[in-house]
Length: 57
Image (cartoon, rainbow, N blue to C red; front, top):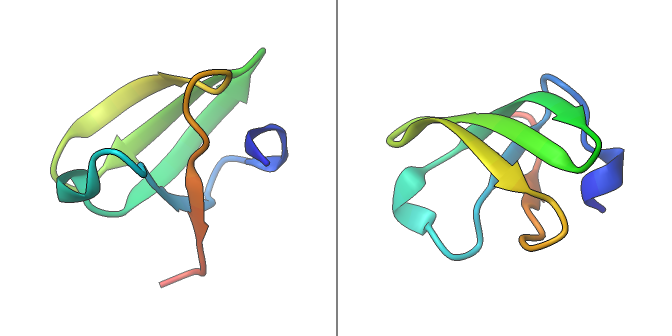
C-alpha cells in the first residue's frame, strides 16, 4: 500500500494516533515524508510502517 502513496494524499500513522492527520509530501525509494498535524514533518521507512490511507478531508 505504501508504494501507492503520492504527494497530497492523507494518511495516519497506526502506532501514533496522537500525531493526527498527515499529508504525504514525497515517497522516494520507500522513504515517505509526511507532514502531520501535531508532529510536523516526519520521514517514515515504508518497509517498517504501513501507513493508513484516509479519505480526503
